[in-house]
Length: 490
Image 1 (tube, rainbow, N blue to C red):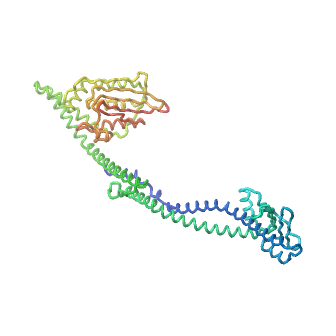
Image 2: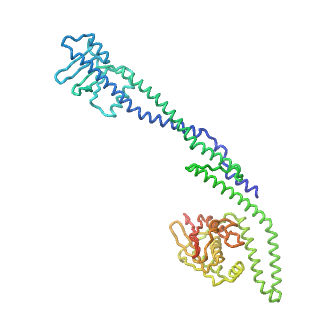
Image 3: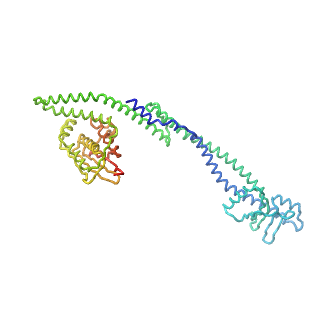
């Protein structure tokens, strides 16, 4: 049975090997994402910057055209040199320049007719998005377009300057600017990504890999204490994760060891069950023979002998049932809850139960035990009547053994749940018992107890889809709440 338990435990915690194949590591993903996000940020920066570059390019040509035209306007009329005029136009990258002064207009043109204007750009007008659209319109062009650019002089705002120029030189400058931005963006993204990569690898990736390695090693052999993760002195979230993982590994290891011990205990008890029953049967036959002896002393001790044998039978039965039964099999019926509570009360207040309690406590009860049924008569429940009877009986019996003079049972119904509250006036549970309340063979308050009573109650409640909870336990008594959900089809 030990081997079976160990094998089933390993099968439960061991995932398929295929689930651990890593196609792209977290470090590589982080590096790629960092480069991608930085490039996206650079794109968002590039869009307005290329628009601004185009506008600044045109404004500089407006200023150069104004200077070139002023050189000619200061010369005496008719003295302008055609060669100088041509050089000034070449310097301004323009086919022609027009100055609109407050009282006159000055035109500087190359020889012949100016080329046909394809587009007009007015620097005095426009919006942010319009300049962005115009910039990308320039970038996607393949043929040269002749531009008529209008703007105010930067030094003399009252003077309007017009120039006719080719678009290709500006587009080439924009391409060069874009290439420089791209190179710089790639350099920044790679450097930043590497810095983020190595920083996060030191801060996060390596600790996560260490945690993952510890988890995989622990999975292979949970009972090997050397596979517990070494907790660092980090105080951040990963440090907390390491501490929690170490604590979880210790708890799982202890739970596995306890389950193995319980499995061994179950196998041993099952093997001696037959011999133990024969021994108890022999004791019962001997006690029956002694009962016929007409001796006052024998008659005085016989009830205690019967009680001791009965206690031994119940103890063995509880242990065997817990080991063998597993999850209780339910046979649900619908019945009034108050009638079931009355039946439990009749059993717990019977003389036979009084004798059993006195035998276990080894002292007579101080007062008559009282079972208070405060469940409303109209409340019905759909559950396994026999199993629920067993749960209420275990709780009531525990209360009697704890020294309670009365037990109060109350129930209330909600749309989804029926809650049964069981309260007593006993001395309350010790703190040590509260910590191990639902642990088999460990949660008993009494010396020599198995601690199976509450464990069995919890198994019954969970089989119904509910649970049991300790509401309070102090010097004024103890209260448990039994919660059973209502069935959807009920």
